[in-house]
Image 1 (cartoon, rainbow, N blue to C red):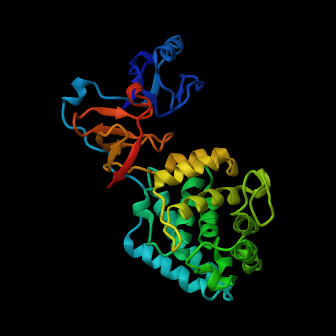
Image 2: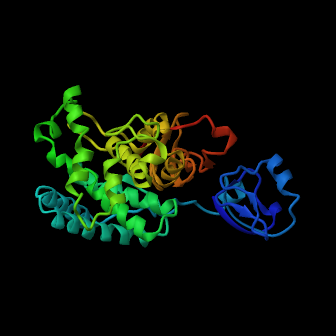
Image 3: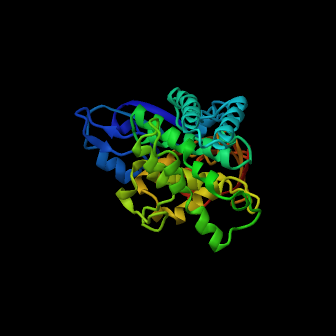
Length: 360
């Protein structure tokens, strides 16, 4: 359960997890978000006698549980109408097949970008539910819509201004435009690429940059983001082997969302990973990403949407009630057989329990 507290330290339920930073009445940080309020932490906090405001999550007591059935929170994740998703993919396909008309190319991307931005700007919650976002299993154009959307969500999450969010949406929509210069036999090959073919694929960010180099509608920062979206934070990416801040903010953001969407999308030579599987894989690659941006990205990925049914490693079935933003693979759940509410991120009896499968 969640609880909003306007009171004092001693009003914090023992064992709860703070969902917000807690400040003193002098705006001094008293306790950071995602802190477990155990007895030792409570002892430290008890020295402060002033008022606090906090939102916490905690396991419902038996008395609270018996007050009525606890229903999942509404799924507030970002999504689009099916008509818009198909329109966006079809528009990108049309403008990508005529890349010589750069003005129409960028105008089409900007039109889609404005609609994507308007949805994100109106959203109170920044969560990405893959099922509500995906256009289809078609790859290049759908992938571009997904990357533009997720890049905008991540940019807003880390506090970027509206111009930056607009720009990175368009950069995300156009990030793979250079693939139009790659032979279709390589792009559409129904098997893994040979080393020689992969070297050709690795030229597409440079092609994308060059296609847009004379566009007045695409800034140099946007072009650099497109050029650098396959660069890795540790310097192992391509085309230039840049590292850390040399990649630029847009490139670092696009790199994260591009990898995620590639993992969760079905290709002719591979099955799609689930959001949870993709996150697990990206944890093993975390040295390749700006770690602060990666943590922020994890906080908006809705691996197990509210209301989905999950199977736990102990054999129990449960329903997801709400998200733990800092722990996307460990939501708050309700055990179906007992009605017990469990916070997989903090409840001592469930710290070794994991979700093994899910269905919406």
